Length: 196
Image 1 (cartoon, one colour):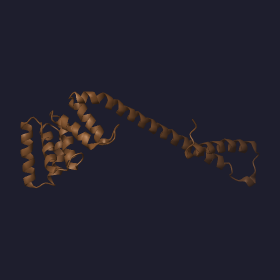
Image 2: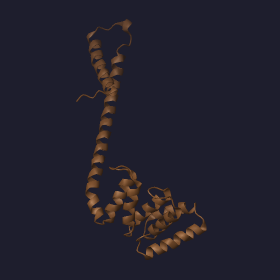
Image 3: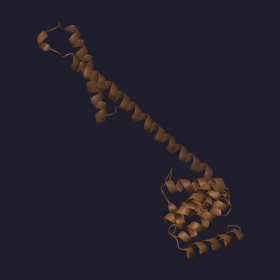
Image 4: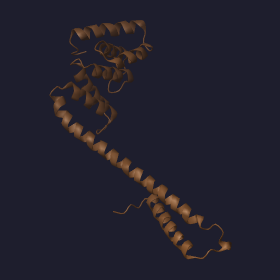
């Protein structure tokens, strides 16, 4: 298949100008009145090389994007049944894919569902991600109290990210909201993270 893009056409034109220009200059005796006409094929040659490199880089980028896309499709196909069987790592990974729109259409509600399933198993990174979803109102109604609760739980389970993010949420909360979030976190831990 022939690439009919404008860049490709310009590349071909410059290459032809360079080849023909060099051929004509070497075949023609030197003429003082012509001056520096020999520079035109050189410019065409440089343009041809530059455009060729540009097209190669563009092709490699497309190929990498296609590879990543097929990688996401493979991941989705392999992780979904594992996640449905309760594997928290697969649930977290599917949640991230849905949140970011990697290999699937971006779907915050589905991401929250996967994060919640993994969070209920005590997975600190999923708890942190769930807290961020509440903080940003993505897939759930924005709620700093629940964001704080999940970030606090994730921090207590070893998530460094939860510890950093909780400070940001606290700047938008009243002391009574922070106290309520801490009470909810204690109750959630007592219920083994189920139904929080």
